[in-house]
Length: 308
Image (cartoon, rainbow, N blue to C red; front, top):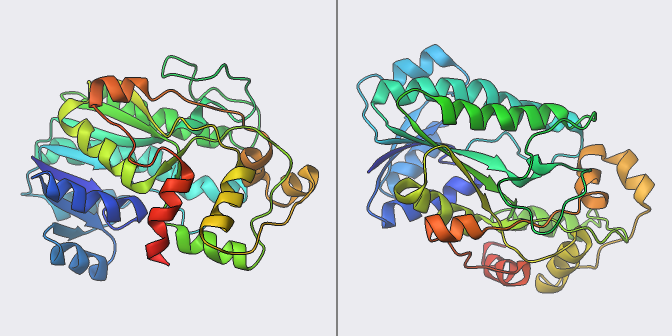
C-alpha cells in the first residue's frame, strides 16, 4: 500500500515511517523542510516539500502522485502546551488542514484516510466511569478555553468519516511520550515539571505504540470508526513525572499548589490537576489486533532513555 503521510517528520512520524516501511508499505511523506525531506529519502521513503495549510501549493505539489491511503498525523506543538492559545495552530491543522487533506485524498486516488485524534476529547472536567470506550460522548463543549480544541477534534473526525468515497478512521491517542524524553529530562533538570497531590488518571501512549496502531489501522480499521489508542494503566500526572525522574535518574519534581498551577498554565493545568480519565482500548485490540508494547510508563521511559 502506498501511504501519503502528513506529519512524516514529527515526533510520531519518526516512529511511524520506519514501521510502515518495515510492514512493506511505500511512504510518501509531506514535510515543510527540505532537510526533513532528505532525511525521509535516506531511510527509504519518498518526500514532497509542502505546507498542508497552503491549499493551492499543496495540491500543485501532489499533482500526478498516487496513493492508496492518506494519513493525517500533524500537530503544531514544538513545546508542551501551557495555555489554551497554545493549541490554536494545531486546531487550525485539524480543521482547515484536514479539509485540504481530504481534497488531496481525492486528487491522488486514495480510498482510505486515517486521522489523528486524542482521548482528551472525552472532556477535561466531566466525570467518567472507568474505563471509557468509544461510545462515550466526545467533543462536547464545557464552556472553557478548551472548547476550540474539542470542536477541532470533532471537525477532524467528522470530515474524514463523511468524505465521499473515502473509508475514514480516527485514532484517539493518549498523551504521547517517548520521543519527547529530552524535553522531559530538561524539564526535570530545571525543576520545571511540578506536581500536585491530584490523583486523577491520564491515558498515556508511547510514540512507538501509537505508530503501530496507525499501521494496523491501514488494513484492519473499520470505516467510520474511532479507536482509543492508549495504555490502560491508571497513572496520574504526578506518578508519570515521578517515574520519569526515577527512570532517568534526574531530580525529583517540585510540588506546587493546585491553584498556582492552574493560574500559571491554564491548559496544562487542566490535565495536571483536573482530568480523571481511564480509557478502554478493547476495540483496538479486537478489531486492529493492537496491543501496546509498553503497557506502563515505566517500561516506555526505560526504552526511551537511549534517546538522551
